[in-house]
Every structure is written in C-alpha cells, then in structure tokens.
Image (cartoon, rainbow, N blue to C red; front, side):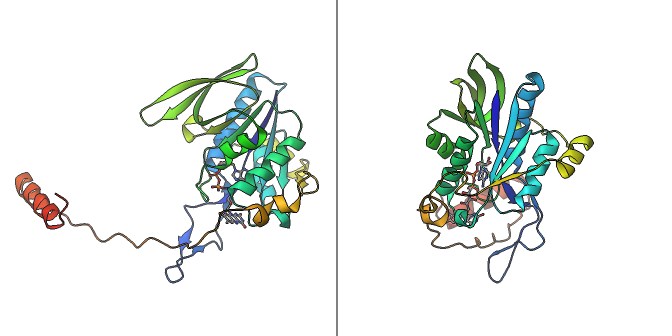
Length: 263
Ligand SMILES: Cc1cc2nc3c(=O)[nH]c(=O)nc-3n(C[C@H](O)[C@H](O)[C@H](O)COP(=O)(O)OP(=O)(O)OC[C@H]3O[C@@H](n4cnc5c(N)ncnc54)[C@H](O)[C@@H]3O)c2cc1C
C-alpha cells in the first residue's frame, strides 16, 4: 500500500507575539514546527505501516527550503521518504494554488492508495487544502477523521468527528482523509531513525518543472484570494466581578443586561 502524508511547516503559534504598534506578527526567533494535525496524519499512516510492513509512507510538503528540517523529522518518526515542493514560482500561493501544487507533486509519485492531511494548519487555519486536494485529484474524501477503524479490501472505514458524536464512513481507496488531534498520539522519533534522517536520508526538492506545472498555474499567479486588510482585534475590556449573595448578583446581571438592551 502506498500512503502520502501532506505536512506543512508552521510557526509555533504558542511563541508568536503581536507587534503592539504595527499589529503584525513578530516572527523573528519563532521556532518552526511540524503542523500538529499533520503529526497525527503521519502517525495514522505509520500505524498502518506497523501492521502492513509492505506499506510505504511518503511525506509531501510545499514550502521554503528550511522545511527540509521538518521533513527530516517526519523521516525520523518513520516515514520512508519526503518531497519538498519549493520554488519562487510557488510563492504567494493561496489555498487554491497550494492544493494545485501539492496535487501535482502527488501525481508525480504515481498511483497512491491513501492520502492523509491534517484538518487544518495552525497558521493559515482555513482547513481548505485537504478537501481541495481531493477535488484536484478527483478522489473522495473524509474530513475530521478521529479514528481509522479498518483498511481492507480496497476500502477504509473511519470515524468522522461531529460536535456531539461521530459518524462511521466507509470509503473506497484511493481517497483523502484529514486528521484531527483526537486520532492518535504521534510517536517520538527514535534514535536510529534520527541518525538515519540526519546522515543518510535525502529530501527530494521539486520545482514547477519537475511536477509539470505551468508557472501561470502556481503561486501568486494562480491565487484568486486577495487579502484586503489584516488587523489585530482590539483587546477585550476588563471583566467585572460581581459580589454579594446569589440573588444580589443575579439582580445585578439582569440590570446590566437591561441597561445594554440585551433583554
Ligand atoms: C493571497 C494569499 C497569499 C499568500 N501568500 C503566502 C506566501 O507567500 N507564503 C506562505 O507561506 N503562505 C502564503 N499564504 C498562505 C497560504 O496560502 C497557506 O499557508 C496555504 O495555502 C495553506 O493554507 P492553510 O494554512 O489554511 O492550510 P489548511 O487548509 O488549514 O491545511 C490543511 C492541511 O493541508 C495540508 N497543507 C496545507 N498547506 C500545506 C503545505 N504548504 N504543504 C503540505 N501540506 C499542506 C496539511 O496537511 C494541513 O494540515 C497566502 C495566502 C493568501 C490568501
């Protein structure tokens, strides 16, 4: 079985601060990490490989050259190989152009049985790339996958997370699944794999020529999304702590809501 995992290198948002004057993100010195949902996606693929050792797991990413470090981390976790789609032509890509490029990379890998992506990236946060990828490749997809029950006889049975439960879905392979964090706990990198990733593993870097894309179909040229304005929401005002008995506090809440014409 051939599995592809889409992985994005993202800034660790726990470390990102906002410039109070300009209202922009301060990215300097912010470490880059493997997008958390993508670590769950990779773990799901590796679990399938654990029980079916003839499985290969390839990781594909689109990003700048430094994303090779994140891809080496994926190899150290257990992926067989990794591919970085990187070129100036890919710069300025919105989700539409991103999915076109990743789909072209996956096509170059040949017949694939299963594609995993994360539900969403913690920086862009759109959750669009997985479904767009499926559309570009003409494949069925299931989002919000919280459990992979079975992969057998050309089908996969998964649980799709809902707000108050889950649905069980059977899909024919090949298909695209997007992972949520509840799917699993990603494994640690092992020492031998870290050594292999650092010393031997080669990350293949592909540009638009390698994946047979016209520059007009990638990057900014193929991005219909236009960002009109970006801003930091004003900080919330200080809350008010009410004191007194339950009745006094409830009376006070009702008076305040009436004052604001909320009731
Ligand atoms: C007009 C515009 C211009 C932009 N210009 C740039 C730019 O110049 N440079 C830049 O870095 N970003 C740029 N972006 C952001 C870029 O479009 C998004 O980072 C990217 O398309 C992914 O969207 P997302 O982060 O919302 O991913 P989501 O849709 O939330 O991600 C879902 C899943 O898809 C997969 N995935 C997403 N992105 C990638 C990827 N790159 N490689 C592999 N797998 C992936 C992952 O598995 C991820 O968990 C721009 C966005 C817009 C709207």
